[in-house]
Amino acid sequence: ARGVVVLLDLHGAPGGQNGKEHSGCAGRAEWHRYSIDNSLAVLRRLMDEVGEHPALWGVELLNEPGDLSSAPREDEMRPLLIEYYEAAYSLVRRRRADVAVVFCVLYWFDLWGWVTQLREPQFHNVFIDLHLYTAFDGLSEATPDETVVQAARTFGCRLLQHARHHPVVVGEWSLAVDEMGLKVSQRFVDTLFASFAAAFGHFFWTLQMDAAADMAEHDHLGGHVKIGQSPQWSLVQALDAVPNRLPDGSASSYRYPDLTRHFGGDPDAPTLAALRSAAASTVPAAAAAG
Image (cartoon, rainbow, N blue to C red):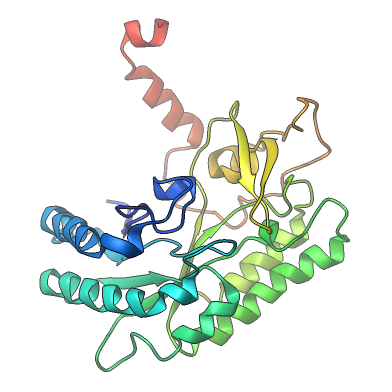
C-alpha cells in the first residue's frame, strides 16, 4: 500500500559460499564443490512461491561469494560463478521477465573481472551489488576526520565507475565507520548520501539488532575483533540515537548524526514508537511475562 518493494536475496547458499557466519556455514566454504544445483533448486522454489508477487522488485542470486583470506577466493570461483549466474538468470527469467537480477561482488580488486559479464543484449536488467563499509578498509578511531569523509566521497567514484557497465545497488552500508564505530559524523553521512546518488538504491545493514548483544566482527585482515554492543549496525537504533558502548561496558563519545534528513519518508506513515507500541500490544500476556 505504501509502495514497498522487495529485493529477495540468497544470503546463505547450501554449503556456504564464503565461510562466514552470515552464510550459514561458519568456518567452511563448500558451495563451490557441490551446491550449484542445490542453490538453483532453492531459487526455483522461491520463484515458485513468490515470483509472481507484485512487490518483488528483484532477485539477488548469491551474497558475497568467496573470501579474502582463504580459498576459494572470489577470483578463483569466477568461472563457476559465471556458470551459476547464467543458469540462475535463466531460471528467474522463466518466471518473470521484468524483475531485476542482481549479482554481488565483494572485493574491489575483483570488480574489473565482471565488467564484460552478464551484459546486454543477452542479459537485461542485471544489477551489480556493492557493499560499502569503511570499517573494513582499515579505518580506526585514530583516523583523521577528513580522511573518513574522503572515504565516503571515494565510494561515489566507485559507483560512478561501475555504473558505466551495470546499474548499481548498494546492498549493504552502515554507520560502523571504523571497527569500533566511533568516527561517524554528520559530514560523513551527508557525503555518503551524496555518493549514493550514483546508485539505483541502497540498503542499511541491518534494520534492527539486539542492543544488548556483543558482536564479534571480521576486521580488514580477516581476523575477529570484539566490538561490543553495536547499535551502529541497526537502522532503528540509529534513528533513535541509541548511544554506543565500548566492550568494557563504558559509554563512548560516539554520537549519532541526524539520519532523519535522509530518511524523510511518508509524512502519514506511523512513527517507530507507534509501530513498537502496536507490536507490543499483540504479544500474548504469557509471552510478555515470560
